Length: 635
Image (tube, rainbow, N blue to C red; front, top):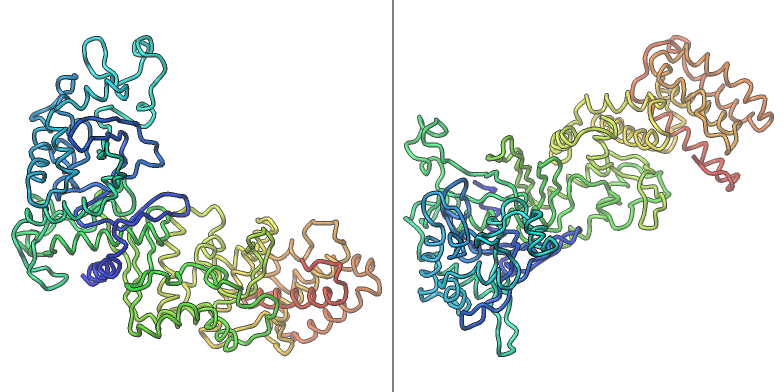
């Protein structure tokens, strides 16, 4: 219940944002919903005068369709043939009193009678706003479809039946296909109608679905209708309870619920409890506010992969650095652009500085918590909390600093706003780790699974699962299977993962070449890098084919001594072509090879460390070349 309590407190902390429309990166609107309200995509907008007369109607563009509507417990969870009208805006079959007169088919009872009775109760209550009374006055006349036909929003055939499908006969009668058939999918009776009140006196009235007075009017009215009180397991208070909780959590079409117990014939709770509320009793207010806060946070800042939600938030400040981003995304400026000779301790200090923007806000509110929540649904009707942690914000930031200062390497796969490649030193994003381990065509199912497995590594400082490192290592050792850019990206990410593993054992490496390191695998990696650079320089900038060192990399990692002989034989023509320009590299080959003892110059497969030696040696040589000859690019 703690996640529900924290969501409820988030709602209370941001109650000033209720009903305020915000926009996502794709221009889609969302808001923190008022209690007893939900959202629907409307198709037709009907304007009513303050005197309760029809004024005009229009078909709503899809970009403006999202509408905040009041809802009851029953209407919010209605399904199938159940008649449960929304209190104000609803489908044509509910709000049109002349639905049957225009050929509408009803199965048992007329939905309009339920709808207008419910609206009458609201309009006659002491909580009713003037706009509700105007809308009720008009709809009680029961002539909505007739007015919509008169103003050419809907069309009727010769038998006075509503045209549900625009065929050749309809085209012969009325001409081109009207706009309503472009926005409504399926039967026209499912068209959703929203109402607005038009002022003939020239006063500009707030739209009904954006009017706080309307929100408050329905909240007060519906609060007076709520059922029996019970102990709320979330707050510990005795409040009006509910057993119908919200759906549409991830999007408007999402039917999965986090809390539900409507199966009294199976054994979802029987055997332990007589009634569902004995298992978990939650008050209506807490359920509404917690679910509305969750919907708002998901729209605002969650990452959704294959319908799995990854959400990080804090009750007082939602701008918390996410766990699935790389350092370049979190820090406004890359922590390190060129300089890479930091030790881990120094670099951790640099990362901590990058987090200062977040950490400084803690000074006025120490003790705040950060929530990490992962949601997913196995079926269309049920959703589960797969992961939830509530931890101190200081501790959370410390863990992020630790992750971003230990799982580090030099990367060159990010681009800035101008499209130029930038290099940054830090931890890769978890999504990029998934692509490094399983390839760029890894399915969303695999990516979301890996991201969930990486959470304890970042938040709790646990080891990265060995299969992820192993898979990345084997992919990197097979560069022929990838494009050059993809292999370079996979190489740097794999080096970061290996470095994190070694850091856990206090054996971490830096990108800067360690010339004192006599580890066999590290030295073999250096040899491979020198061979690669030597051949690349001999080939020149115009030749882009892979060098022999890269072509034989897979075999080299499995049989280093035997494969090195092959690579060295292939190097001889290039050494001859370079002449005196290649003497320096040839000397390094001899120097590095001489440091490998004869008893270790064997075909024993290389460990992951050889990749670190390869990367560092190659980086060192390109740095030297750049310093000596700025005209030649590094890679």
